[in-house]
Image (cartoon, rainbow, N blue to C red):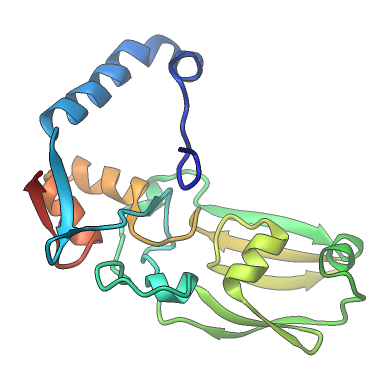
Length: 199
């Protein structure tokens, strides 16, 4: 389902890929066929293979973004994410919009605490404390790795990465593949202490 992933049907892919459709769809089919029956497991159980678009240079610990801790979803370096052209983004939100988002008159917004990998842990809005994830979702930011600056009648959010940051970075994986890493090496980098087995 599209519950935890983006899905596009064949018609949409033809529209998106245009002249590259045949080349790209054949790559997808080849990858599917060559890995048919393979699954990723941790201690014999299939994993939740979460993935996202790009990171700030490191992935997130699962428990830092969600409340659930998975031992194979821990923060790892992801040095190739800069290949995504718009990995660094700026979003300007007017004070009027911010007041509407939080349903109160905002006097001050400040980041109180970061995780070691520079994702935001806690933000103080007036006197209320929010998580970085909550701010990301409320303000519809690309990532929970962000800075905040007040400028005139607006708040400027500068984000790094795109998505929740847990699991495998798609752009990071692409960068590793271009450097010659195998798909097994890439998966074992992003998912710690796992095995790829035939089911």
